[in-house]
Length: 438
Image (cartoon, rainbow, N blue to C red; front, side, top):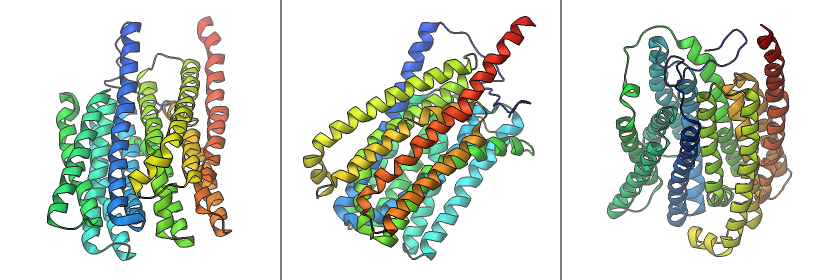
């Protein structure tokens, strides 16, 4: 929902009500939320990392390449559902009966319809057998549902409960995977089925962990669709850009090189993934924090975003240096053969570029500039795909793809801060004297 000036109107946790809390308690809650957000992404990183390492160890880089494509499609559908429904749930008035009903209907329709389309496309293309396609349908739809439950917990500021949900998904997936190996050989079907099982159990646990008021289900009524679609479509589009870009790059690498090349790039990305997911975790926290903190000025929020960028970039640089130090022995230990140093450095650079963008994107979305933000992000994503495609088509080494991908997000982050956020801050500052005089 937006006001007459197009700014996002939040009703976080209630119908526009806010409670005053002591500054010290607020800071403690903020730090705890940030740590919880990072911990939840860390758990997701551990799960993704472990499963993909197991794929590489048992199915080889060809198998890892195929699994990466499947897993990438799951992430795309999850991003669509999370952005469309999850972010709208956090920003719009979810206690309004029509809005809540619309959110419920979209929460059912998006996972089912998109998962069906994914499964049909995978089987029709010949990439997977029908049995794997069925497993992919279940895994994709459940992946999206579990992501929605995570977003609902985040919207209620229950970040540490999200950690529990992610831990359950990880544990169940590993148990199912080990059980399947007792009765048969490791297979792509087994890995996809294990992901589906983990997401199913985690979603149930997450629903149980939701605050009682957030578990309320209203009967389906007409109305609310326009408000949800107006906000959610932009957020879904933005959320899907990065996984869509990675999927497009995998396809181009497959066509110009091989599935083994995709597997090598994915192995390096998996090695660096904990850094990227930490950035995503803090980005999710900042989005919720900015939406919840209605009293702070845009100028203050922009200063917070600036500090977050500096902290995140520093964290990625330090963490990336540590990863490079352990790469010579840890890479072969995890993946069975050495990882390409250039590719690993490229993914560290990519994570750094995302760290320089995420806080500004979160603030722009909450400030009602989600449409313009999507436009900028779409352009920098398209630029990244074009640059990588030119590199590959011209015969360049696929190992340089991640480094090329890191260029565009930096330009997008500069554009978001300069052309979206700074003008909003100046407009806010120019309105203050008029308010005081009146």
